[in-house]
Image 1 (cartoon, rainbow, N blue to C red):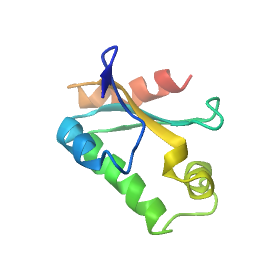
Image 2 (cartoon, rainbow, N blue to C red):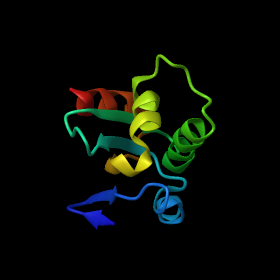
Image 3 (cartoon, helix red, strand yellow):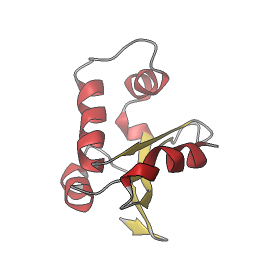
Length: 106
């Protein structure tokens, strides 16, 4: 779903096909928001947003993550239904991704 120039997905697992079609081959900054505690978020960036989001989903669903990862532990505890995905911005300049991610995180 597009909202105010942002793409938001409230049902991450149920929206996988839509997320793939919206994000495949695009680079940008994304945000996972914990709906149970919206002050807790995870900001990331990728040169291929769909591949990165799919990797997050697969890591949690397969239980293949480090116990030190706060984000993965939170998703494991609260389940994907307690998170929404927001695409904060797309960028064509892949060299700026990390700088934009850090800006969005602050």
